[in-house]
Image (cartoon, rainbow, N blue to C red):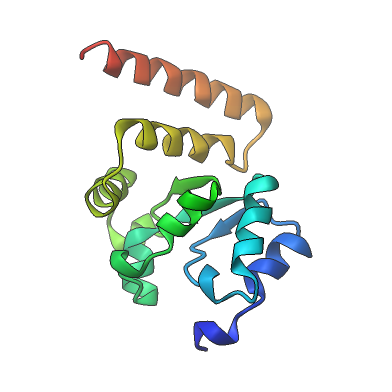
Length: 146
């Protein structure tokens, strides 16, 4: 199915299905009112998972065609994901390196997107809080070296 024939599925997922996260989301610009949808996603705090390697390998979406910047510029929360780590034989480090090279991310960007991965995780609130505390410590340790 050509993406132009899917002008409704992200919209329906967030407005009818009340999705709090969207995986891939590579065809956002083919939605009927994609700018309105981006605004809605930003306002409702709906995160999009950016899976660069998976989107490239499975969907044929190269980084140069990826809507990462569209989401970022619209203020939609973003996090990076491997999507299928066991199949692709990659890890999050690989995805962050790739994103940094492709989109010239700053350290602050990387840190924000890393925290987003936990903030929007489908886990119990206490587990999430514990994981964020551990991440706080890891970032503090890393930053103390510079």
